[in-house]
Length: 417
Length: 141
Image 1 (cartoon, rainbow over the protein chains, first blue to last red):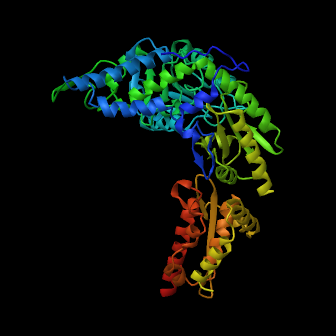
Image 2: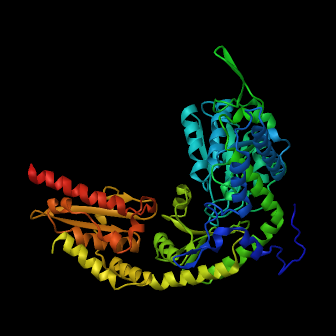
Image 3: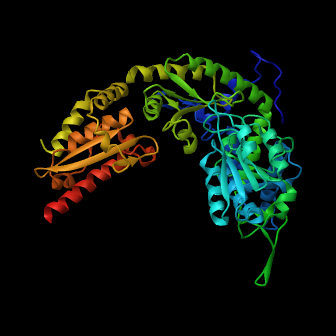
């Protein structure tokens, strides 16, 4: 069922009171204060329908998928596979064969680094990542380079937090086999020009991997329009449970890639003379999948669709503008990441105040932000800082919460002055 | 005063603060006033790297007692360091090894010691004991 958003209030078509009521955790109090959750970039909160989906699955349908002939197993398998279809539609993939369930973005990227790496990387080949990557889109490639004697190259980031595309054009070469780039920077919020990068990558016949961990929840993802070869994301940042994620891959490439992990469900026939493997997507889903999480992820996407991806994007962009303007008025506050295209993430430092100190005081005020290097040490080093405070907003956050953050930061300044 | 008497004294001091804000203001004050350690000691040799804040620590034995010096890049962490040093510094290695540090929990700052906080404090407490162990071994040798 799709909810109809007929009325637009202030040009924004999200019924914020209804949305907030959908997320039970948001009405909680911490230290006796209203919870202000500005850490959705680390993990998003869950709407009641997702929580219910998990309970429903365990209460009524729990049974291992693809195994039994019995009623429950069919019910369970059916829900798992329906969820795959929901995800296929959500990403605009061509077929369900292109949607592989994993445990999350990290597992998805490691799958590609192993399997595609085995398939196409030879000594002296080059792999390109960017300076703004999360460690989980750096380390799997470093490990691959070590295994194969390949070389890792890095696209630099400009002062405002955008990728230096000219530099990328000079780095990429005939030796480049894989380019892996974040859709959206977890630290800076920058939305990278995926289409433009895809074109450059494919001109060199290299494979293009997109880390969508911070992208998929903030706007429309169309893998065909993006022309990426792989798109990885986590359920838990998309209002679904932890421990479930997705790897999208173009069918013709996935077909050629060798299996990554061996086990049950990924085989056709096993004998000690040799084993044949299952068709896509099961070839890459060894062992018992997190079918409960997969079902709940489907429900989370249904929920997002019911609110409307366009509505979410519009609401969050409005909130970003408001928050950026408001926080910019604080004397001594510096925002890191001022790209033209950003999601609703604001990272900043208060002059002379350690990010840990800022985070500790905000916490006591009921405001949850993330502090530290955000698993992007090369990036924080590039900006010559030890760490940063990140407020990551999403469509359940409000302008009143931005105001509370503003007041909290004034308090922090006062305490440390 | 011995280690436990100082701990009791700190607990007494903190008992007048029923508001978290006053407590943290006091910690910030302590942090600001903590004598920073010599920059030559602010090197990787002395560092305890947390994911969030860094802590540097050094210790020397003077007349059979350990004098600790420590520092951090975060003020709240420095405030807690100031309290820790007040408790442990200027005691014999044996005294330091024989006594548990209970005041941090009692003054309601336990959350700062959780391993997941990664602010270097838990590692610093381990390091305090390691210094004591090392100097004790030296004295016994």
